[in-house]
Length: 408
Image (cartoon, rainbow, N blue to C red; front, top):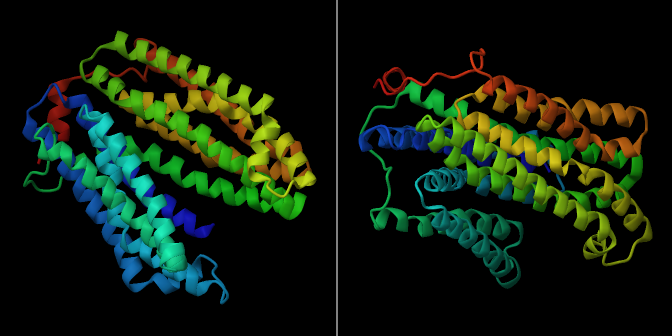
């Protein structure tokens, strides 16, 4: 579990720089010269290199100490250290892969970006089989397969540059702290969301194990695996509408921004209703996929937990859209607040309150409660943001903004 947190941090930094840099690129795409959009990508790459260097240093010189710090005992140290060191050494591949995916979505190449992601994922599955079962490489083979996947993904996406259709690229410029700071601010919500996911899983494992034992942990595993699918739907929807919102903001088209916000919220709610309907009416079938031994206790806990836990869906969909909306209109603080509230600030206290009261239903309702409270706060922030002459109102001045951000 601790190893997954490290992976979340690596991916989170890549998404932070990709979402922040891609958003800035998309906002300014039609307003400035190509050399200026190249500065956005180049500074994102500078930041990615700096972050990768930190992970590389840990992997090269401190991987043993870091493995012990994460709680590995003598029984699993060898396996955990091998996996962790491999992941850390390949961290640049994960970070730059996320960076490229985000920029290509904002550069009118979403299909090729999707092809890269799917190609890397498929390669991971195939290489897992080859390395683990055919070559008997064990955990190291699993780590190696995971690390090769982003390289294959980037190889596929490199076609965007080979064809010459790219509107961004590397340029010989000095790193700009102002640009990097702006990129990090716009993309910070992605890092917070990615990291908080791993932390929440650890908290839930802690409280559920003490209330329901190993069977409860297994039931939560069923719920968490199904939740990954629903989360991916909303993440994909938010990622898809983000370039459009950024472009509308760059053109100062308020009507288009509001239309995209309404359309994406409606779409998220429709997906939420459909998905929860499947979960509610096909609960038994979904649990049976993971319950090959037909454990009655596991089945009962999982089915009950699923129906309560997945009440979060409409609220999660709204929060995912609102988060990218605020990023797209250059209001990073509300976006970061939403990510923090739904990720850790509400979830962790609620989980321990319900645990102290020994309310297992409360544990299953922790995520829906946190997401619903966050939605209420997010809606208030949206009305403030869209209200004329309010402190949240943004007045775009392309000359002032360009001078402030692109002074190198």
